[in-house]
Length: 160
Ligand SMILES: [Zn+2]
Image (tube, rainbow, N blue to C red; front, side):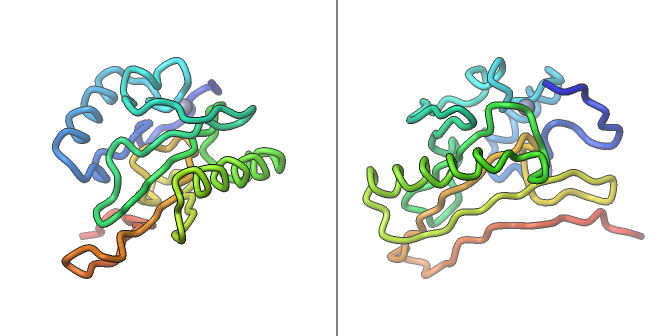
């Protein structure tokens, strides 16, 4: 892992925790002072098995899928990077291969792929974990509430 020069925030943004169990795991991560998605730490915090492993990514299910999803996969970059500018073009190609495999394997008729990246002293970009990861999300079009999936991007620090 690259040296942590971060001054303002942690490896995780606990404000982005959506569920009580997720929040308590994130509190432990902050206490441990480690990145939960770095390979040497992943098993301690992420309980979903690795479905596929490439040169650049591990493909797994999201441990805490968003509400109103039928499927929610994440691809975790194997090296600790936080910004898309640090992503190798070959890693981008491999990501498409892995997500296409999941779409075939799990019969996903439609959905979205999304990646947040970066950190800032002015808030966060919406990620709960800063280590670069990508989402493949299949919405549940028949959810009884008729809700859309909300993929949050950006949480500025409130100014008083
Ligand atoms: Zn990491």
